[in-house]
Image (cartoon, rainbow, N blue to C red):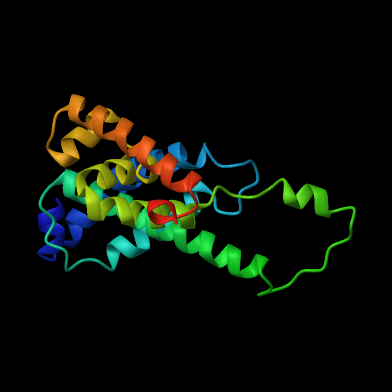
Length: 183
């Protein structure tokens, strides 16, 4: 159906949309379940933004289902990181909102995990080992499980498990040290 859609078959897009939307929503729900309650970006909004960007990517030469979900995970990562960057800009003074001292403790408890730092660390990891970086992207941002990630990367589930474990350790070290390679 992906290839038929690329070739201009609107019926293929109509058949593909509910299937793709359901899969993307499942992945977004998995990711958003790790977020704090009341996060401004909800799973449905994330999926809708991914869907809009995918429709604009009609020129992509879709190889297969795995390629589609790899691109989708990458788009989710971009959207979430852009959202986090925008939120940081607002926190630093863009779109200043005045609050009372009574509200301050509540707002301070609502900080997001630092997706920008994670994105920077994943970019650094990709330079060293692109497959481990893709593993994290697919699992963390795409919401794929071990077997689904293995299928997308065309490796064994054991390889994904090993890459996932090593990548998490590397990322934890990078994030704890405050930046790329401990800087």
